[in-house]
Length: 231
Ligand code: MN
Image 1: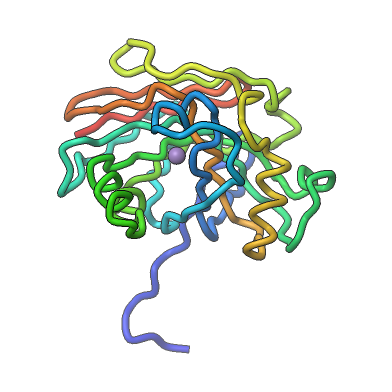
Image 2: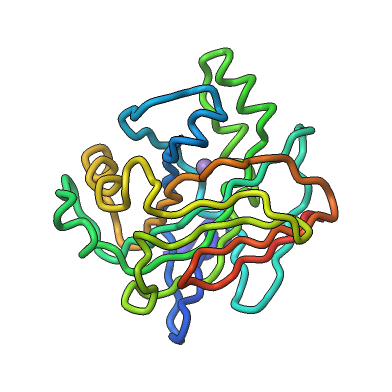
């Protein structure tokens, strides 16, 4: 087969302790999945989970021990950090019950759901899709994937983000409104999950702006650190 031009290359994430990389299919993201973050965004209560996507090539893959870099994106004056636990799907499926959902998980990573908050807010106000606020180029930094067997008790892990050494976000994975298994159940009712899918599981409270030069350091207990500088 020949193509008119070179097809895009496969986006992949390193796996701690392995030579093989994790090839990425899609990036699903969960909205408002921690109570205190839902409140800071002006919402309360346990809504059914809802989802949006980012393109796979929005990933900024940061190798173990490295510091990644993102440009300050166009069109915004309010670029926000959202630290998130990322779930890496190793086995696909449809209508996966929560009780079996964790069998579909390959591992976990630390991710940042970077958000052009001003554009997202404008789209919300107008009832339009969030794409321009969420799914922009280089909006999804991610660190290496830790296979689930090595990740420890991820369901109760601490999650935190520091900016220039100052604490900004701090919570625990057990404060997810919809836990990982329930999220997979809901997601797989709407889409057929494939090996290579990533799920950004939502951010805790404390989202705020970053500016050029800021260094973000994300952390989930049991996984590697994710360090990203805004250029
Ligand atoms: Mn998010």
